[in-house]
Structures are given as C-alpha cells and as structure tokens.
Length: 266
Image (cartoon, rainbow, N blue to C red; front, side):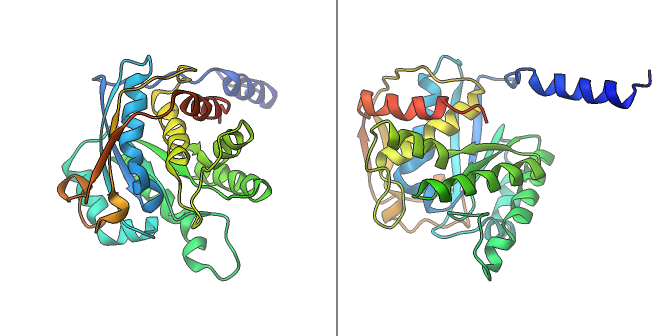
C-alpha cells in the first residue's frame, strides 16, 4: 500500500507518541560493559547501577565490567583495541559509553572534543554490531545554562549515532534543586551522591521504566578505583583495586537521586 505524504507524516507522528516497549532479553541476568574514564570509575558507578537494578521491580540482575582510564576519550578506547577485543570475546546485552566530561559541547580549537561525536558513533556502531544496546552516558556542567546547552548537544549527537541518551547532568541539576547538595568535588569529579544520581539515570535507562520512588538497598561494596592504577588496556575485573568500602546510601538522599532520574523521559 502506498501512503500519501500527509498519511506518512501522520503515521510517523503517531508512532513517535507510542510508549517505548521495554527490551526483551533471553535472561534476567544482563551483562553490562561500561566504557569511559574517571567519571565512570569514581565511586564505582557500575556497582551502584547493579545495586539499583537489583532493587528495582524489573526482576533483572546486572553483571558488569568496565574499561576505563583517567581522562580517556572514546577515541582512545577505539584506538587501543581493547574495546574491540572485549566485544569480540564476550557477549554483552548493554554497553554504556562515556566520553570525556563536557563533550560534545566544545570550545574552539579542542580537536579531541570535535572528534567526540564521530568516535561515539563508531563505538555505538561496533556495539550494535555485537548485538548489544548502546547507551550514551551524558556528563555534566556545574552551571545550569551550560548544562542545558550540553544536554541539547548530547541529545542530538546520541540521536545521530542511533543511541539511547542517559542525561546524567540534567538529573544532577534537578537533584540539586531538590536539596541534594555536594554532588561534585572541587575538581568536577562526582562526589558519592553525584555518582548515585548518575547510577539512578543509568539504571532507569537499563530497565526501561521508572525506578521505585523510595529505594532501600543493602550495603554496596564499591571499589576505590580512583586511588588505583586502573588502565583501559584490560577489563577492570582483571585488575586490583586499592581498597573497597561496603555501605548503604542514605534512604532519603537516594530517593532524591531516584526522583531526579525518574523525572525525565528522554
């Protein structure tokens, strides 16, 4: 059947308004690979994500691993070859991709930033060729107008790459307005509850529906990767963290983080 241009446009608009169905997996155990830098390994975000998914009503369990190195760009991960080798050797259901903080909102002359979208698109293409979902872990700016600009750039870039976009920075701004302070360290890295906001946004994206409004989770054992010699050359699970802490987040503060993550449908 041939549709008129008007019918095709109406059908497209109708389809865009339909709810996005939750992804269907062969198992309730989801293997998730995190690829990024210190904004991923500070406070051991993968362990936080696994705890939140386990506490959700999705029935899913996350088994995670990580390729990360301080200051690494996505182009670094593509060039080194470890990312390609891991995708070839291990099946993952989901790959979370995080480029350098503030990308792709670029200042003039920043060639690495200018290459960010191309690198993320290439990483997304490799991920989908390996039959996994690709999620763009959006980073943050500390000032709201700058964050709004970064969110806009990130959404458009993720759409161009055919990826899902997890807008962590926008959720951090919402959490701050709701009274969750001290989200960032002085150097811009996430403080503990900044990472809980990030983990909430990523967990919500992984399970494809809102998290329970009030989540009480068991103590989470988080590795101190920030004080270790972590390298992107191999999986973090094959490396040694200097130490780890096992504790449970404050229920009220975590509820603010989850609420901030639940507030966006993007």
